[in-house]
Length: 96
Image (tube, rainbow, N blue to C red; front, side):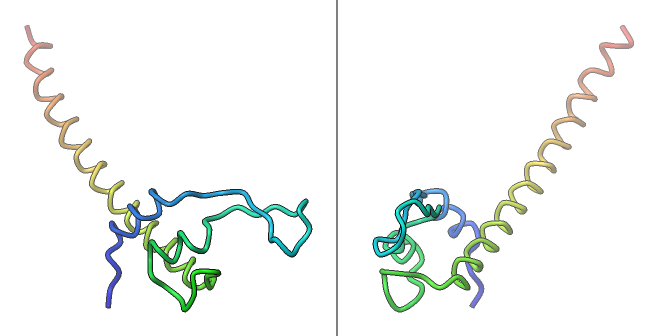
């Protein structure tokens, strides 16, 4: 079943990202990422909310990248249309 990439992107954008250390590890060693509970709540992946599999994180990242790429292409097309409209509007003025 295909992922709804735009929905994944929205969930990633809404998810808190924190700096953290493992409770049982060296507190000087820092990590960056979502809390497992937030990740599980957002995507419902895996079997627990106390950790998540890197393969799930990779899938979420790739879906979000695809959604961003689609948005970029949409904005580029819209920008092209606006540039063409602007050029048409400015051309008669230059002839005056």
